[in-house]
Image 1 (tube, rainbow, N blue to C red):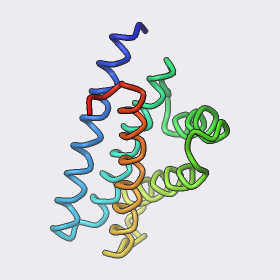
Image 2: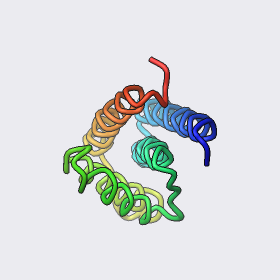
Image 3: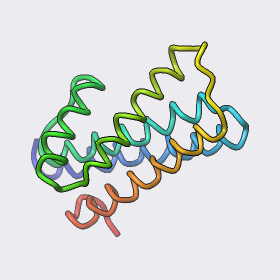
Image 4: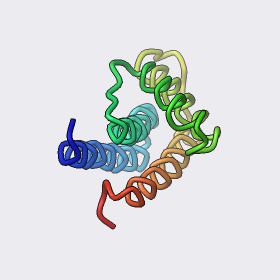
Length: 136
């Protein structure tokens, strides 16, 4: 993948992440907390995918995305360990919200996932801008 392709693909992932975050907010406002949690995860997922693309890496699964993020961005201290926790919690909550109807999610649960997703993508977005993958 050349630099131009990286830049284009990073931008596309960020756009998908931004759309997922907007959707999460709409779902939260409509008290659709399971859907909010799922879309908040996908906002984070797309931003992590964008980060991985900056290294020329594409994850083949959700679990692989977490492993690659930890390997390339947490172990190298580019991001604090807290971001690994946010990603892991978001992924687990998304799986439960999508596949475990017996697990009820509250407004507080959804608000927490949404707040963490916003923190995560703000930080990642700032890094992508600093690395000049996104315009300011």
